[in-house]
Length: 196
Image (tube, rainbow, N blue to C red):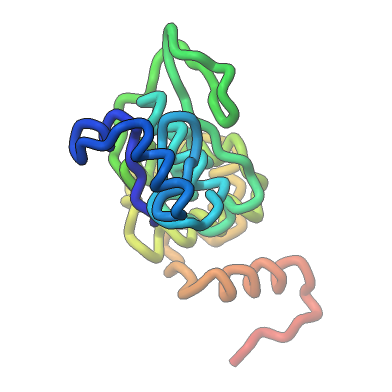
């Protein structure tokens, strides 16, 4: 992940002036991600770079989708991430959603605040469809990011449905996204032979 620096950070830590920042941008040594945040190198910012920069600029928390992207969950690529901000913070920036209170169980990933892996996975049940939530679940089980005992206590209808189709939590996780997709495909089409 590309290193991000705020304007205040560049001025305080490196002693740069606004003119020096503009010069570094022209030379391609840094790139403006969003207003007040710069990334190392000349590459154009990705959507995730912009979300991270927005979270850094607003001191916000990445939502479940953004947290899933940062934790590198499978199955969240199609959904657009957001940054949660509270109270008087502006909700007018792109990628920002204002909430009454920010989540409290947060971790730092990629220089920004995001939901813990277990909170992100639980909240993604309200955002993703069954296929993609199962892919995220398999990733978390494979990487041991979320305790099985905690998942067993969740009562969201999508979680219960996916666990029932999956065969429960005692079934070992798949070894890769490809294997997860293969299992999902075999479930939908019973004519596909089971590999030996």
